[in-house]
Image (cartoon, rainbow, N blue to C red; front, side):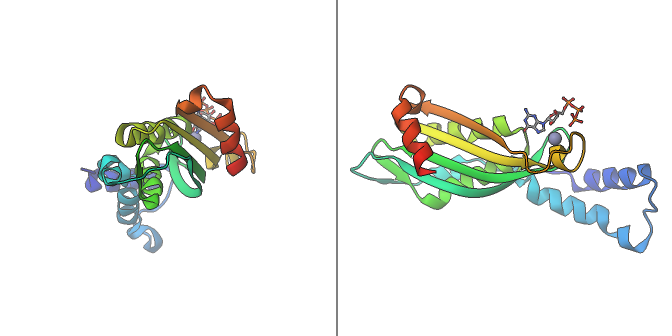
Length: 183
Ligand SMILES: Nc1nc2c(ncn2[C@@H]2O[C@H](COP(=O)(O)OP(=O)(O)OP(=O)(O)O)[C@@H](O)[C@H]2O)c(=O)[nH]1
Ligand SMILES: [Zn+2]
């Protein structure tokens, strides 16, 4: 369980640290607001992807399924700044598929944590492998990192692209090409 009280104390200290008056009107409710915000943006820590991927449907086709342009927002664990973009998921079923919304739900479960993009990519792929036992999975994420754009190196517009391949995607370049054509 998240400790709202600790988050509020921490935010008060942070505000004092940057030289703010924690008692001025505009900031009075800020610690409480931020505690509630973290409940949302780190809410995936308390969720298990299996909850969403447990219900499957039997199918007689094993053709590739691609769900692309799934918008996601996550938080980088180094700076606590947002990184956000699109997730593209492909899988080759082995007799069972999952409801399409559950693919986006799986992205959310892992995005709503403190993350590295590489780790987020791999966690989504592994959850699909564990729960669907598909013949193959490919997850690709394209994201802009605020810690790269608004501060530090300051490269607005730069994108980080990561992939995780499992099963048939690992040794079949034609399938990977098909995925890139589809997205
Ligand atoms: N691999 C990876 N790096 C990330 C991600 N998000 C942010 N970073 C980088 O993590 C690094 C932060 O740690 P350091 O290598 O210690 O660099 P720093 O000097 O503290 O930070 P910068 O001022 O941003 O260079 C920076 O290079 C960020 O660009 C991510 O999702 N994956
Ligand atoms: Zn960062």
